[in-house]
Image: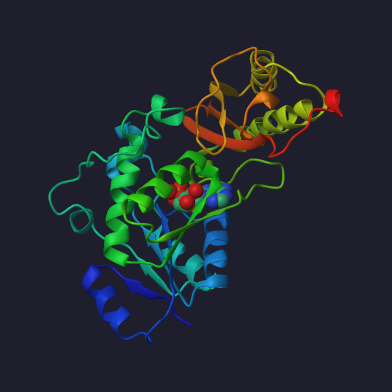
Amino acid sequence: MDILRLSSHSEWIRSRESLPKGQRIGFVPTMGALHTGHLALVEQARETCDFVVASIFVNPTQFNNSEDFAAYPLDLENDLLALESAGCSAAYFPSVSEVYPHGAKSRAMDLGGLDTVLEGALRPGHFQGVATVVDRLFDLIQPDVAFFGQKDYQQVKVIERVAALRGGQPHIVACPIVREPHGLAMSSRNRRLSPTQREAAAAIFQALRFAEAELREFPVPPRALKLEMRRIIQESGVLQVESIDFALAHSLRPITDGEAYLDRYPEPVQAFVSAYAGEVRLIDTHRIVAEGHVPDSEV
Ligand code: AMP
């Protein structure tokens, strides 16, 4: 079936009124330049929802670097084709003035500190921008369920908080990270990588998997582990590490003690890497200590 093209909220209201009563509406917010990772969210949404709306909106308030915003890839016609072939029911691509009728600025939302740690410390204001736009898109679309990728792990936590502030609506589903065959997490920004950079960028996931494998074998302290991870990424000769962080996977409390063994914490541990390939900022994340992990030394 042809995808429904919605360039305004009023079109969505009319379409929604014409749907059979009781349809479960799934929502997949994106910034476009779609790849297989986005389409996997649409596919997951189709499994549990009757009608799936994807939005394409490059949100100005979540960029803390105007050059990054200006360089963000746009590809609306191809995106619509990709969504249609993934079986998405409708695509909503609003104008900035529809999303932000009073000017493009973030609202101050109480995100419980989730917005100021880890990625939030590196990109001040970013998660307030994300929370603001997602809250607004939820108002406009009124979905029953919304689907997000764990590639942006902290973003999922922030959005779960936004949904909680809205009384638990919509229900949030976190979907697995989709990767290139060599391990690089798919991202719209990957389009800006040269073939050499793209190849070298696989080192980020190699470092994350190395950390997971090490911790399965030995209780390595975080400081030493981060040094090893940094070495693996820098050895690519192409990437510059910006940060490597570990945090408790549920509460997102950053682990700051460089010596205390990671399997001593009451929650699983998630690792976060950000690195530059030239001008392009890449992020990735991985569970390095699983729930209920018991180090071999104690078995
Ligand atoms: P973006 O267009 O980058 O804002 O991403 C839109 C949604 O797609 C977000 O929920 C992302 O977490 C998700 N996403 C982006 N890349 C991937 C990926 N490689 N695997 C899974 N989800 C992804």
